[in-house]
Length: 304
Ligand code: MG
Image 1: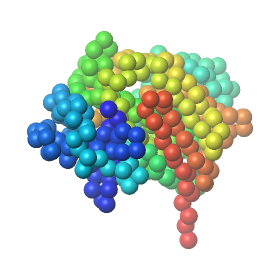
Image 2: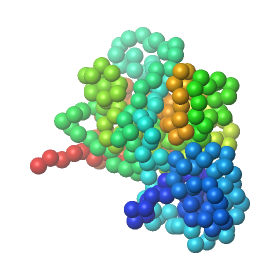
Image 3: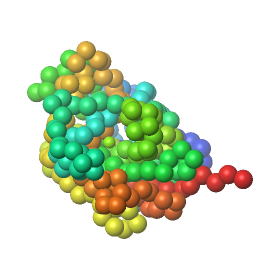
Image 4: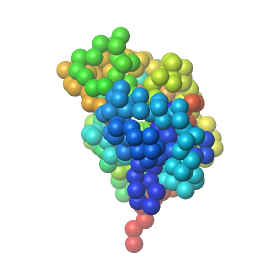
């Protein structure tokens, strides 16, 4: 099931996205007297096995809900979790070719990380799948893109063993870890340059874990104004998803609804020769086969 968060006339709800239509899950649940709270993505995730069983019953009776299927064109798609419970967890330098291009740009020999490198993006950075990305030229001259596979945690836990990590995954979505490279360098720490408002589009949906047999086979790609810049398989990650979940949850309790970005492959703008920064009006399309795509326009802030 492709699960989405949508808004219609100011009302936000969780939906099942199928082709050109979206089923309002809470309305469908009421129709067949489901007890589970299906009113928001976080409620569904926190509802665990009970909510998942309710979704399956709804899926098996989908044609009974003629009144609650909505035309997707009338809806605004939001980030699947529009307001995350806390900062978005991220892994840096997790694809060999991306690590190498970064060192090459600095004129240094590449050194691969021996453990996952974690940082976070502020919740205010989260943006909708087709949201505009704000470019403030007073703050940054080097806004860059990073397509990433994002993992949404279902069952929480601490000290999760890598062999059981998949049991803690609710599903997968597409992310772009937009980054102000110059801010990242100036502050000598990644958080500031990674946390500007609107710089973490997510979506368009969460695909449930059971529907993606092997996330390593997913193919990521990104284009700027139609020109392909990134293309790779998740199998090229240095640290795979179970390793990331095990390392992050060591002594740190993961909660249902936590979001983890798993790193970007090669092809980022700053590593190009000459380096390419995103500009006002650029359209960045981030895609993962089997999940969907983000379409984000870069919009420069104008001041009187
Ligand atoms: Mg990144």
